Length: 128
Image 1 (tube, helix red, strand yellow):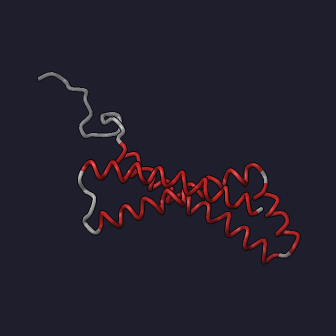
Image 2 (cartoon, helix red, strand yellow; image 1 turned 60 degrees about the horizontal axis):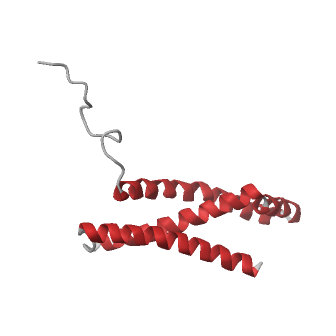
Image 3 (cartoon, rainbow, N blue to C red; image 1 turned 90 degrees about the vertical axis):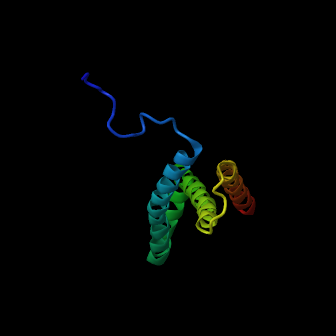
């Protein structure tokens, strides 16, 4: 019997990434990003309760390039998690399990994420 050096169970090095697997991983990562990003919201609210000086410092951080990038990534994670969560609700109801529908809904989630994120930022910047 020859020694076989193949992996004993499937893992990421064996399978090519597919839309469904990448979206599943992204859904988990965006959940984590939302939880971590909520800390920024808590900081902002605590600064607002702390008085004008602490609120001004929080506003300055959020308006900085790093703060805006964090806010943009949080917005992107929010809309992805929202749209993919709605997709999962349809799956929970028993709809959309056909393979072509799975891929169409996956692409719809990605497109909706980008459109909603850019639209919300465009509206937000127009109001400022």
